[in-house]
Amino acid sequence: MKKIGSFFLGFLGVFKKRKNVKLGIYGPPNAGKSTLANKITKDWLGEEMSKASPIPHETREIVVKEKITIKSKGKELTFNLVDTPGIATKIDYEDFLKYKLNAKEARERAKEATKGVIEAIKWLDNMDCVLVVLDSTQNPYSQVNITIIGNLAARNIPVLIVANKTDLRKADIKRVEAAFPQYPTIGISAEKGHNLEVFYDNLFKLMK
Image 1 (tube, one colour):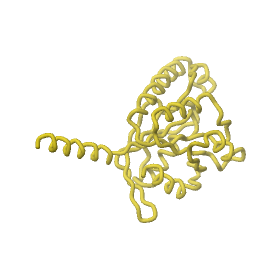
Image 2 (spheres, rainbow, N blue to C red):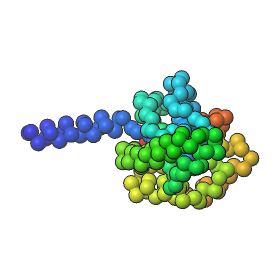
Image 3 (cartoon, rainbow, N blue to C red):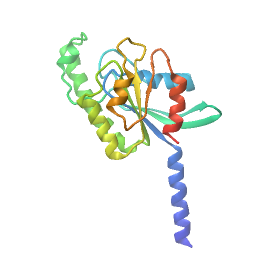
Image 4 (spheres, helix red, strand yellow):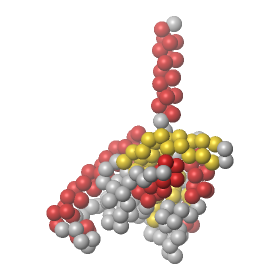
């Protein structure tokens, strides 16, 4: 009887954990991860969660916003949103100097960004689903993107590719789809709010 009780309690524990679904936002620097995170929380909570900036690696620590509930076609979905630092295979402090940071600020930012990348990869083990945000104006066949997708595939995590910045002239969703055909791709402009209704519909499919 004790074994049955223990099993039942264990089952309940798993069920409760599953209710706190973690949706991670991953991608290279400046793809629009934080802009998308802010759009989601603004739409459903009326507040922003992350600071967005044209300077790479603006997000250098994990940011979590809990209990976001979205609604679509009579359905509801509640999750914890996790905005992560941009993944990069190389971070050089000199890259920040062109953004008018002084040498000390640039070195500190590079150090924090490197630490952030390591944390972001570690957090993959806690994710239930992941949005991979890519800049649709850039070549998707980069070492960084392949590294991100490889880490996700190794963990068998459900993925939705978000081809962002579709409002820009050089955007090419087809090229993103061709690069990673194993995952569904949705084109949006997080900044302009284009195609967000379809994006939210796809979230339900991703997290079912």
